[in-house]
Length: 171
Image 1: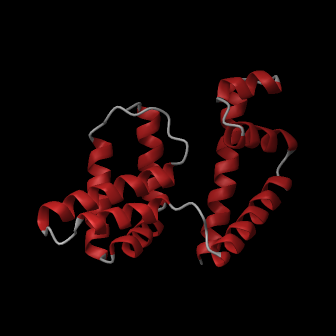
Image 2: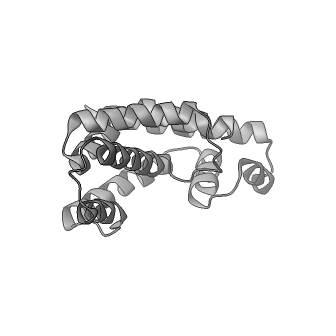
């Protein structure tokens, strides 16, 4: 695993531990198993498995923790049948949100676009190129005619602003 990918995933896990744990508790039905799965996820990340670029750290970590929890449950209890495991995995794959989730997603997107609209034009352009279009930072710098360092700086400011917003939303 590249050090950058490892650092991104470890930082995400640290910042969003509570939310990830709640998601796992809902899926697994057990807070202890959720906590153990996240701990094992952290250990596996520290082990430095070889990974490519990660598009969505939250989804990747959730999936990784669920897989670890399923493996642990298989080893420890054998209470899960094949059908139970299939059902658990199907829940993870279902991309269709229910109406309340769809409304929450729309609200979150509106808030995100509001934050982006209040950012300086270059910062907004960097965020959209890197996160929405998925271009590399180097390519974003080339397209915008700025240095790679400028793109890194602007992304750092975007992430700080989003972190501050998310911190106020959790309260």
